[in-house]
Image (cartoon, rainbow, N blue to C red; front, side, top):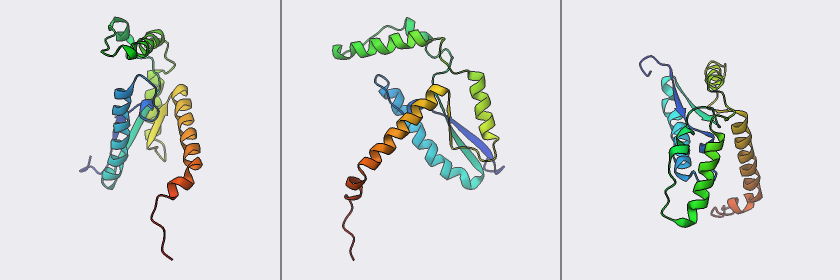
Length: 159
């Protein structure tokens, strides 16, 4: 791609890379890492004409949840069992009913790549969009609410 002076790197992230829910800490940490890597990589390869896109799907109807029904619940801390069992039950219940259509998702990614101004990231699925929009709205409100405290942490300016 460097030699050619163009190309794409598509990193598969998830709505999980932007918003957390209980029970998915390690998965979310991996997706948050992909988000950070993608943002840095984008700047590093831009001088070579290479574009980088983070794809952030919500729940898509794939076989990703299929194995939960056969997977035994194993937890060394009894206090976490109700959470683990709840997450497992939710995954089993959603399997095959996720709203995202993988074919339409791929089409959205290709269309975004071919747009006049390609995005740096694309959230896929209405559920994912709503989750990310809510997360960003909450983050912006919290940032504004503590603006004075944030700005007060600097050394005083000299006149």
